[in-house]
Image (cartoon, rainbow, N blue to C red; front, side, top):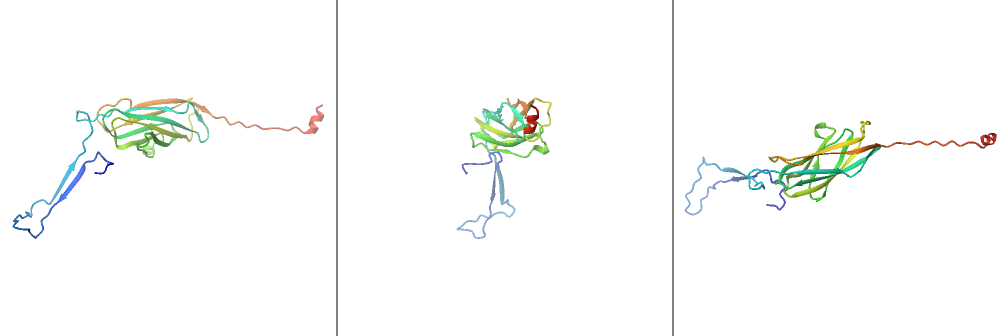
Length: 214
């Protein structure tokens, strides 16, 4: 097998075909029955890396923080969040991170920064939703004992909630494993400030006006 197997979840499918040629070698009198099966299919599953039980229980631990102390709403404003995902439990299968954010904000990038070899893939906004994005993590298996730091970059496209002085984001972690997982939903908020555009006009007095005022 290759050193880097991409799919360790789907079973290995083995197909064997057998037949007999018309020419017999030596004194062999073996004859293949015309009604015999000439094809065999076998599926060999990969062994899930679990503890002593038969059920893999991933213990995903999620956390994140804003790298900006304040969100300043202005033209082309952006902000970043640092996300940590640890798995001290069994191997986690089909792991994903879901980012929930307010309307008018868009996730533009979500990359692993430590270790950078962890693969993440974020699809388009879920089912047309404008406030949620799902990112798959190291499909198909997020290994036991792995901890990864991610950096997510958001852009403020349009901010409609002028009455709110805080912006909240919720991030959740999911897995196909059985059993309960802890610390898989985190909410954080950051103060919101609005940029103010100032326009200054200068008026120059003429020399004649200045002499008449004396």
